[in-house]
Image 1 (tube, rainbow, N blue to C red):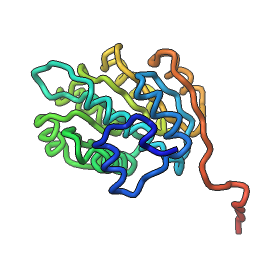
Image 2: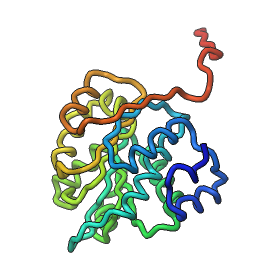
Image 3: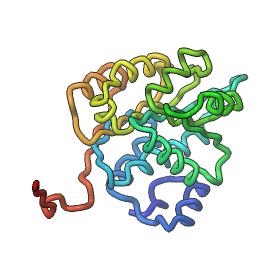
Image 4: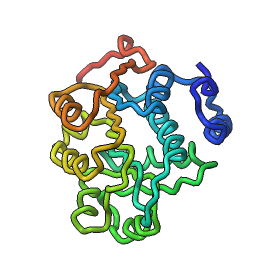
Length: 223
């Protein structure tokens, strides 16, 4: 399926074309229309399925269409990831896909200085990518408020649960407005996923796709 048939804006299609992206992967074809329609989504997706674009493209489009009168420039979309490496990767994708949209964004994670992150937040962002621990640090220090968040995305939620971030996820979700769109992507479904879905999502649609490589051809040997 081509991206043109999914209802994406000309600005996003232009950025995709310049990156030589023409055909949507299965998860993109299923997820993008649901997200554009404002539905909460529980997506089963592994690395290699194209899930970042599956949420990043409709997120950018909805943020360009949704406006909230406010005096501050607090984040309107929040993406939580388990590691700094994934946070940087997701933020790079956001910038690449949104290059023709006026959509300021930044990324915050542990292991880096707080001051540059605080400066970026004070300048104002529409989209924030963050790891849970550093996000909580900013909330507790009063350098970040989530009262304007309209979209909350949990990427690789099962890994965040494995790393003991359930309480942090719950804290973040409670800091966001109840009236929001919530997207959760996970390769597996541990017990905590069901708890998050029941407590913080509204009648989510469920989709699941497999990675495009064939695992049956992989052999493991221990020496």
